[in-house]
Image 1 (tube, rainbow, N blue to C red):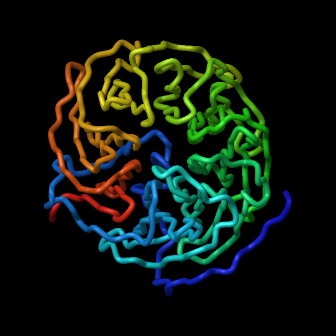
Image 2 (image 1 turned 90 degrees about the horizontal axis):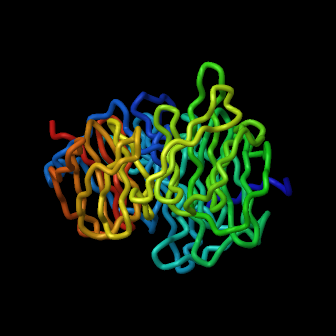
Image 3 (image 1 turned 120 degrees about the vertical axis):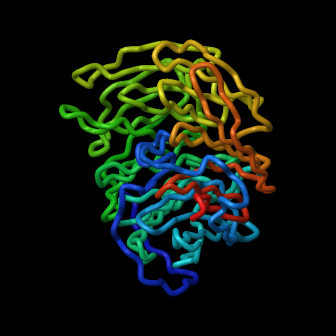
Length: 407
């Protein structure tokens, strides 16, 4: 490791008293605790309207990142300034939307991005004790839940060739004390496992040199096998031990560099030549390939699996449902507009937000999908929703909304 350095806070608001307790309703990283966009045990409102908006707060900067939830706090990142070199981490009270604290830092890496993206594109993560914020500039910041800076890694300064002109988008994954980051571009590409407590590098592995905006996914452990991190690239999917970075198995038939894989009940749904499934063997050292469905082809949004059905949205905004056991396409439903964010699955429904800010709640069955609620938020939305404590959260460049059932 070249070095670990700490930057001075530019400004900070006074932190209010916060709790470090966590609850079963936490949503700790991109696409949820299991990184598959399924909000198990949550009952979020299926009728989205003005009456279901619990609160709406203004944000200090742009962002494509999604909110995360730990206990009674909602954490979000943003970037601001002419060059988007001001990095924000904000904590909101989940009940009121009141800002609990905000920290700002100066980016140390490249901040140039495509207009559709911004520096605050990767979603932050938490282990329940700390918040890890990552940015397109490859700045990686760790605070405690009260906003106190614990450590800071300038991966953009350490590895200046690892960037691209569009911007970096891969979100963090946290497994058992290791923060995993994929930093992959045409010039330099690697993945690192960083000690959550100290910020020091546990391992670093070389990755295929090609621009990659997908995010790592989690393969839950079993009684005999540990939880693994799944790293996706144009070459395929690699399962690595989060403690050592050692490779356990590989799928080498290519995969998307934008949408990410999802895991449900031990089966991995990979955006590869449409959608392809694989399942690790009993010894966890190889995989068995399942089905491939070229007509289930996700675009930017990642696949989501719910109630035995796999769902993908193509570049035209058409939602396709396939049988999760066989890959047979069951039906299609035309939604409106284009989608950058991945839908969220909860209490038998799917929650979509298109790029124009229109929300759709879809009730799927084996026979059809039915739109049961629509709402126009009137702002560009490129992020993915989050769910915690029976509430739904979504952000735009300007605002963060909470939807909950009225009391």
